[in-house]
Length: 153
Figure (cartoon, rainbow, N blue to C red):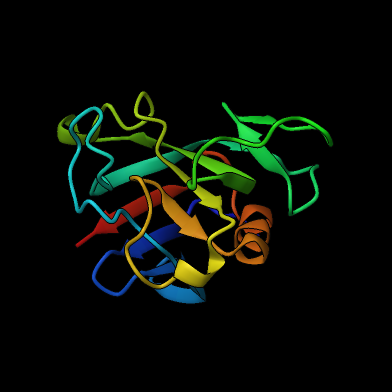
């Protein structure tokens, strides 16, 4: 499916992620961006804007209810993260391509699944782009590392 034309467009205003082939929408999904707004400062927990690429895909072989901590899948019986912002299902780790968002990878900004699926569609994350677990698992299969991503207000 992935071609050099495949790209991801995220609208913060609409809380929507659209997978496109060139300009043609292929799939659209509701998302949740940061409850703290837009920005790129280290520690701000804000969602960055601009141009990115999917630097790394993590979790493709795992069940969709997998919980990750520091990008490592927890095993049954492992203690669960002491936060509300669980990273679940799949991780698409973003790398900023512009000067103002060049720290995106170091800020650990991902597109990922969540246990808070009831909050999808409203800004509620800690900087990442959250998706329903089934949706991010599907998106994961449709794109490759290197896929371009645009996040805009």
